[in-house]
Image (cartoon, rainbow, N blue to C red):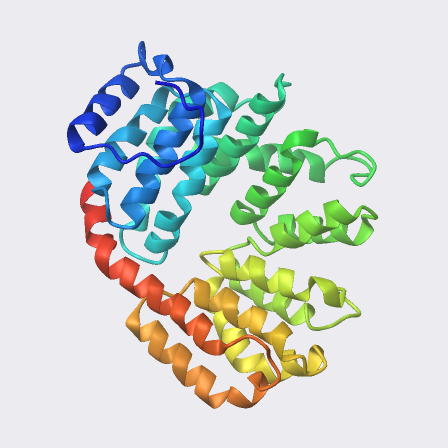
Length: 339
C-alpha cells in the first residue's frame, strides 16, 4: 500500500484492525510508507471527528506512535489532537489526557531531550522542536526542568541580548515553556529582551510567549499594557489578547478583561467594530458549554452597540460556540472512556 493521490479512504473495521496490527508492531510499521502513515493518521482523526469512526479505533491506531521516529506522522497526529485537547481543557479529564500524551511521547522525547546537542537534518530539527514543545506542554517533568535550566542560564549570562545562548532552532519553544513554568523573574527578563530586540520575528514570538504565564496578576497587567500604545504597539494588542486566551490559565482572565473593558477596547481601536470582533472570536472559540453560550449571548446583548459597525455577523461567532457544544455533547464521554 502506497499513497499516490491525496484523498480520504474509509476502511471497514476489519481492515482498520489489520492496519492497527501492522502499525503497532515495531518491526513492521515501516512496511507502510511514511506518507501513508500520515494519511492513515489524518483519516482516522477526521472520520472520528465527524462521527464516522469510533474514537476507540483511532486511539488504538495512534498508540503506534510510541515507536514512530519521523516528523510528518508526529506533526499530523499532534495537530489532529488539537481539537481533543481544546475539548478537554478546563475539564476533570484533561489531566488524564496529559498523562496519556506524556506516555505516548516518552520514547521520541528521550531521543531529543538533550537540548544542547546539535540535531542534523531539517525534519529532525523540526521534530525536536515539536516534541520538546508538546512534552513540556503535557507536563513532562524532565522537559520542564531542562527548559528552565537553560533559560535561567541565559538569564545569568553577560549581555543576554548579544549573547543569546539558547539553541537557535529551539529558542521560541524554550521561551514559551520557560514562561509557562517559570515565575515573575523569568517573565520580567523576557519582557526586557522584548524591549531591547530590534528583530520583528523575535518580537512577535516574545509577545506570544509572554502571554503563556499562569500568573494571573501578570496576565492582567499584560492585557492592560496592550491598550497602552506607549508600552506595547497597537499592532500587537490583539496578539497579546490571543496569547492569553489560548493559555489555559489565562482564558478566564482574558474573558473577564473583554467583558469589563469592552468600551476601552472599542475606543482604542477608534471605534472599529471589526477589530473588536477579533477579541470576541478568540473568546468564543474556547467556549463549549451551554452555560458559556448563555453568558456570551447576554454579553453580546448588553454590548450590541459596539458591534453595529462590524461587517462580521455576530451570529456566525455564536454558531462557533453552538458547534463546540454539539461536538462536546456527542464525543466527550466517548473520548474520556478511551483515555
